[in-house]
Amino acid sequence: MANKYPNKVYLNGEWLNADKAKVSVFDRGFMLGDGVYEVIPFYRGKPFLSSAHIRRLEYCLNEVSILLEQRFAWSEVIDEAIAQAGLTASDGAVYIQITRGAAPRTHYFPQNVLPTILIYAFELQLSGFEHRKAKVLVAKDLRWHRCDIKSTSLIANVQANEYAHGLAFDESILERNGIITEGTHTSFFCVRNGVVYTHPAGPHILPGITRDWVINMCFKLNIEIKEEALPINDLQEVDELFLTGTTAQILAVTEVMLADRSTITKRTGSITSKMQQAFIEEIENL
Ligand code: PDD
Image 1: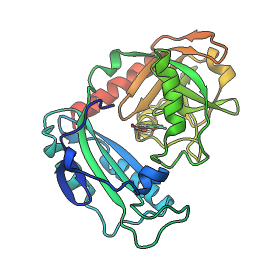
Image 2: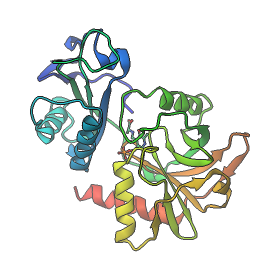
Image 3: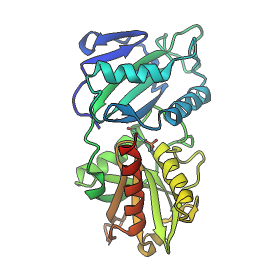
Image 4: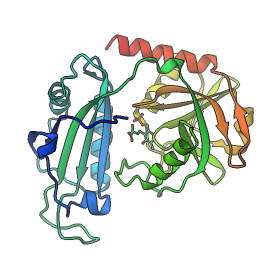
């Protein structure tokens, strides 16, 4: 993800220099993590799969009952964010965050409060993902039971990712009740005897947009795909592992450290490579 501040941000209807953009200390995003967000990739300034990202954002807003005053012209604002950041020829992502707004602190929803809307684009190194090999470790999935909502309350994801980062691993894959759900900010896939597996959609994973893209590509390429979760005890037996996500894209996993600190290694397999090649082709033809 981005590790420097953007120069320009959209805040509640205005484009501002980032240092002039201010939000109330009583904003419920700040106080309660009461908000949702979205991250939309762009390649050479062109948004990728943006309507699916916007659909998921609208689903999340609806699930948490944050109502925007009027219909938002999302695709225009996404283009504007890329232009404001001077990234029309670059790769990156647009970050959108919407909180319930500022109000005296209550656990219930305050009435007549305007949501806070923050949007900005940032540059990302997206090319070359097909050459990377990720090392992951297994961590407990301590998140809530509505992981399908892309909530800004990310402390369980942040703790699990920091656990990996602190040990020089790329990502944690999360285990709930003996099965792998997903990564802290990635979807999880494995390949076994030529069949691709990923955890079924539902309350225990985010329905990743890149995950959906992979599922559809499997159908197109006549590769069998099953939405079935992988028991942690079967990790040893699978042939290939990969992670997907807006920032990870399609990332081969070649090493997994289990909770007992033993390590399983994998090679980048042919199905992972096929997916990566198809993804690259689609991006090149954007
Ligand atoms: N994260 N699972 C989780 C928990 C995620 O946070 C993400 C994305 C994904 C992959 O979803 P998609 O393919 O739609 O990016 C799966 C974003 C990138 C983030 O938090 O920065």
